[in-house]
Image (cartoon, rainbow, N blue to C red; front, side, top):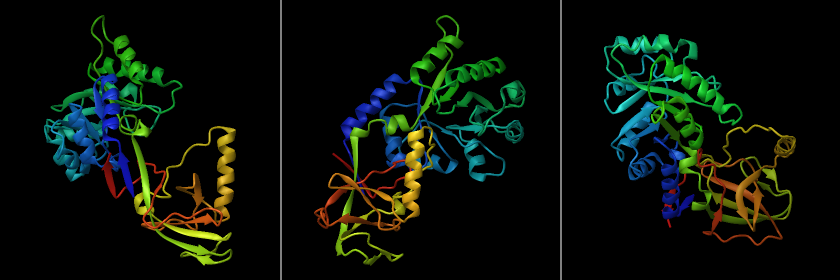
Length: 347
């Protein structure tokens, strides 16, 4: 599996996003958005970012090989995590705290950790309710307050109103930088001006991940290598599960399997009637043993013979379609936030 990256076009996109985003905090977490932590950390350095954000404590070491600035750990600190405790004492690490009891516990260690206090949003994932923020400030002790972190839902409706309401509550408890996720840059700039005094906007930082790293789809293409091709007749048994081929044609063995993220996807909401109809039709086909693969041959996505294997996938090709040659590169659609490619080629 290969990711071919137009490096100049990609970097131009990164620069455009960075220039338009006040207080940019590049997010580098999970699988590194398909690029890997080290590559993204190097690009964050190229963008002259002052701080990046990682998901969990173990990712701090991965970005530090290429990034010398501060690192925010997005996962909320909990007592008893030895690595998180060690990093909380590191002057270049900013620890997120989302419960008053955890603030007390961290302060009780005598640490002078740099901390962000997370405000509970409509996400209902982590955070301290707005009415309890003043109490949270009272528990800081010697901890160094870096500001308020507000992780908003993705839905646009009501997003700005919630950001304004929670920001006002946070700043009333204590002035500080607002670290925001999922608020468009122009709205964040407007909010900053609205919350600050004349000529003195409230300080903000915007965390950006997907829009930064994956926002320009035209800068990349992913391909997979054809490993083998076999002619089959209708009814021929194939694969681990020995399913019968539905028609005369070809079984094409493609590089890429579950270890690369093939066939792995996050659940998506069916919000419209059309989306629900598609989900129902897809579910019916999958129940019958048919699932569309992400591999494109002859301009069309082709059917899996069976669920993908760990490092290879078997797909059907009808007899009317000329099969690809072994070694040929075939386009494959990958969700890069869940994908692991074998190599990245800069073009």
